[in-house]
Image (cartoon, rainbow, N blue to C red):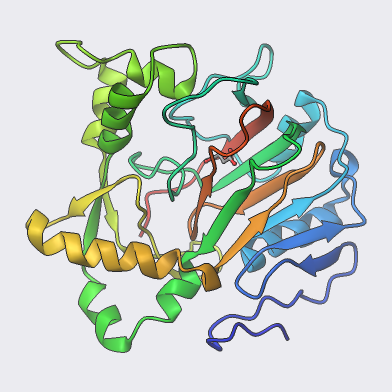
Length: 307
Ligand code: SIN
């Protein structure tokens, strides 16, 4: 057992036959060893999928993957999701580059700020994955927080109070931050910055700013686990509450979910492949690796309307 100090989560590996699982922290995360993702048996894949749902974030070192192999591995989890920000690489529309060029100093870095991926969509992605190609010698880590553990550690009283609430998830804050701090270019945030001064937002952007209302507490459709579904980047308010009423609750929940004791942090290396359960964890990237280049490739798997 690797029981979290709160006693509310056990990050110990299951009894696996085809893979070796080495937990990363008590709160979440695990390295999976003894597998080659490009040629994974069905038995090993079933254990990898179960490990993802158990540990919330899993990663693999030293994986040689072409874009086609990454896409093929990702497709084993289900259909690809709509990607809200990025376009795929040539020939592989579902493999999206996340590249920060050396020496560039963006005002807003893609993925910074605690978030779950694209919750403003009606059906946000279920699983997100990243493959590291060019990794800075220091910095550029990704950090995750376990929102199911955060839910489990709330008092019964607060859990009862928040059970009926729905959160308004919107791209609005990211859009205004991009318009204020970033110059227009052909990067995901630069494309948002390019809307500055437009009389009317493009329909695609307007739809994401309008966003969606999702339950603040969601139930994982595969495992039945309950989790807070909420973040710092896209949560714009709570249905039926005034801004003044919602703000202290949202502030408390952000601090609660992202407390260091509920997190794990990944030091990337070239050929590291990581995937996470977007339904019940939040994550963030850091703008801390100037002047070095960072190049990763992302795939996202379709999810369902949260319930
Ligand atoms: C993301 O938010 O999906 C990107 C995370 C990262 O670049 O580390």
